[in-house]
Length: 632
Image (cartoon, rainbow, N blue to C red; front, side, top):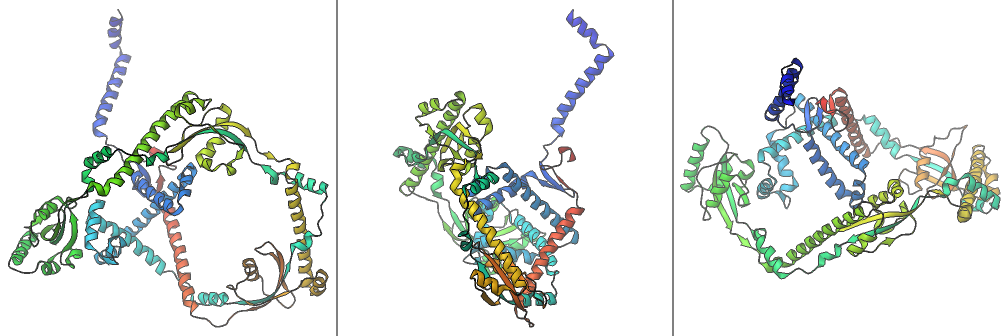
């Protein structure tokens, strides 16, 4: 009966509509699997040009490597902060966007680096040089290892140079006026004469004698200065298999590893080659055949390479390609080159992706294999390190399992893994024990969620086959320390504040007296003397704060002295009176350097303005940062 009702229902209009929709959905899903191709992830679109997510990832990795090399171990801690990682990624993406905008402007203006400029730039790259000179051997070797073709390298270099041509034009068109440079030259050599009175704090400290009530009042008014930071007391398990890297490895295991990876210790066959290359074009193969006949007739291969080869780099070197390993070049070229048996042999015409070639053998090295005795220690060290890493991984997994299965205790994990539960005293985030000074460890130790749940933390890797799990035993919230605990500190601070107040009051009195010409009596009263400062320049070996203040003060006029109080870099208070400003009237050879420097600064401003203008007029969408997926 049920099936009868089903069949009857299927004849109704509603049922037919539903059936059609179901069939259509399956049909679309099936067809979609054939017609829909995976879409490359896009990080941003700049005026219709995609910046792929892979491009962003590659650039981000390069920036990470640069920062790691620059910052060292500190960078590892920074990477544990998601906000920092996101900031770096955003910065890299913004650089890629700016680069794409410049490339689009280069294309719009028709700026194009010449072949000679590209060739000279490649020759100047230090990666392709040996002893300061371009090495075609190194050039070919690095290209083969990187998987980049010569054409790809030339295109990349051409793009970089074209971009640089635009920036150079922008910078070169920027200028500073000669009059401006002359004025800066004169100002840089300006001299100032002044008088200085230093007001020693010690003289006023002797006048300060605070009562206990005054110290208590200072403490009450400045509780934030006596704050004890949040502190925690934890227990933790430390898993450390780093020392196991020095474990003894069985000799048979070393021998087996050597045999299993014998190819890694084998120096492949190498050939020192030279070639004559013609680009693919009508008649190129016939022309190369004719050159081969001339070589066979006794003409010099090297001389013909210099005059006939269209590979500009090797041609200048008589076609020399340097030493080449087997299976590192174009397959047809490689096969023909390594088929040459004797030094001086010349191949027939060989076609490769780059063109047509004649190849000659200049020298050769046969396959060589390092004996086990030479590599035994390296193999043993690697096996020991791998074994330690394997042991660490197994124990780390077991540690994670046990501390998860028994989340309210570390005892079971300690017992099974033979570890000791280590207990700490109270510590703050800034005063953590050395082993715990890790950003992830600190984050877990001071996690409110972990503390409130009374659970073990996750396993935290510390590097070098080290990891730990912790649990918070007790927490002490941030709070002002008791007065009796910080009474001495409070008295010192209150005394320092009062001393500074008295000294500032004295400095103000001196400044006022000096402005009125009544400083002599004030100085005599306080038994202070004046230090003469003559012909002071911006480069004088004086206190930096004094130089900065002195050259910021207005020149004195007849009815108004130029007097100012300041704090020197060592914390002392002082009052300085500017007496005279002497500005040279002539210019020096520094004017040219100053003008060049100002030109560069102006060029940088022009570049920044160009980027802002390009961004303002561009249509830019950021998928990873703000734009929804539908925008693409």
